[in-house]
Length: 535
Ligand SMILES: *[C@@H]1O[C@H](CO)[C@@H](O)[C@H](O)[C@H]1NC(C)=O
Ligand SMILES: *[C@@H]1O[C@H](CO)[C@@H](O)[C@H](O)[C@H]1NC(C)=O
Ligand SMILES: *[C@@H]1O[C@H](CO)[C@@H](O)[C@H](O)[C@H]1NC(C)=O
Ligand SMILES: *[C@@H]1O[C@H](CO)[C@@H](O)[C@H](O)[C@H]1NC(C)=O
Ligand SMILES: *[C@@H]1O[C@H](CO)[C@@H](O)[C@H](O)[C@H]1NC(C)=O
Ligand SMILES: *[C@@H]1O[C@H](CO)[C@@H](O)[C@H](O)[C@H]1NC(C)=O
Image 1 (cartoon, rainbow, N blue to C red):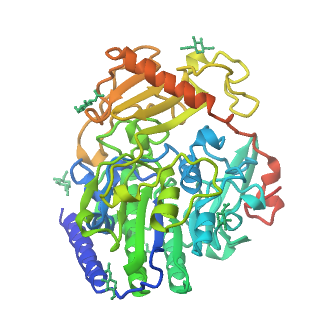
Image 2 (image 1 turned 60 degrees about the horizontal axis):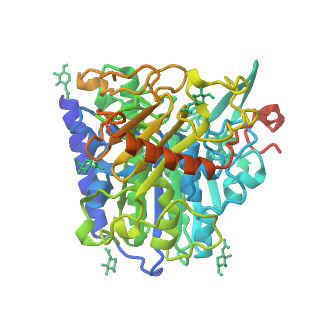
């Protein structure tokens, strides 16, 4: 208890100190109309893993810096991301739904010859047209099999980070199994060069320090776009032990380690903010914070009181932690909560057009909207509808009629021709309504995640849903029932019919999913011991 309070107090003091700095920050107003934008993406950070949610919902995780930044900014509380990594990252950088990029199914695996299609125009490419310096630090995860897929070929002036989806936090090594063969190597790049010399450095410290280098070396004649995509707090659950100390009271070792990882990330974000202040950039900077998907509740994270987990289309999989912090926000919205519907695909038009004053020419038709005026409290969100996803390769098991498809999620498994089928995993939000189709339960083998799981340290009990046998359709009024407790599909068959019609529209508007088989030529052993482009 004492330890817990000491940590809270230390966090508070740290923030008070930071705030003090911010208030007296010097200015850099040389790019009127083109603010610096620092986009911080956390990995697998659950709805109930940020202090300002957790305090009300039995979570002990402490995030004084995030709480401080969000508390002085605009908390986005009707904000959605995709349920897994590559999809969110692809939508952030392209402004387009997965049904339009072929990334509907799964994440990009390290040895898959696959990436965000090369004809997609990216967020940093658009910002370069506005003369931004564009830098990325951290996790890429939208494909790297060809040189043309890699960050510095897709709009970033510089890159330091790892290209795949997960790895060891200290050795920066990644293994991947193809049949009986294990592919293993370093996954850490400085631009295009494998960076072997950082072995042993914990990635949250490493990426924080690289982000601070970008800030300190920034050429002031241009505005800055920095995309900092932390490895934290994705599995494996690894953290220097001192960050776990404040959580000694948490008996679940996974939750304790996860909480420590969050604390370290929070400290890093405090450091990055302080670096912006010290460099004189803060005054003209917009900081955006987002998670990439809901928390994986079986690996330390928590989404309580929301239902479900990472990988699912329940709110716990897709309703994300997000906020915007900036001295450039109108005073009237600072410290407020935004209840407008906002989605990760909205950041490209919001940053390019809204924040940076650029035009949206040259992109393919965007699924995202410019919501900058909504964030600034001037307009309602232009977004009334949100396709969470529609994945024809993820078919509920008992309808997996096509023998060719079962257990073989590759391009050999074609889209089922014809009509949208409720066996397909999909979810759509229209106004208050949310429809979900498919099995509703699958994720990572047979681990059940369509339930309500409280944080272990809360002493509360998991609540299991009552599900009709072979149920394939759920309907919720999310406004009235954000916890998805009352399925209304039997009560409102007309609404179900309308929304299924809309899903059929999106299905017809889809490109086929791409999910190629892994390629042994990706083997790092063939490329100097590091993962990197192989084609
Ligand atoms: C720590 O655990 C003890 C014993 O279970 C409990 O009484 C106490 O309230 C806990 N402290 C916090 C901060 O939750
Ligand atoms: C930024 O700095 C300038 C000059 O010091 C000051 O006039 C302005 O109010 C500051 N802006 C904000 C949003 O703090
Ligand atoms: C933040 O900065 C402090 C002081 O320099 C340093 O000790 C700490 O390791 C940094 N934290 C991270 C996560 O980089
Ligand atoms: C958008 O228009 C600008 C100015 O005409 C041009 O320089 C830029 O190449 C265009 N962008 C794309 C992606 O077509
Ligand atoms: C979906 O497809 C499966 C397999 O082809 C079929 O058995 C089932 O009746 C279809 N369901 C609907 C609602 O069309
Ligand atoms: C959903 O619930 C809200 C809050 O109870 C209510 O105002 C709204 O009318 C409902 N929406 C629909 C479409 O029934």
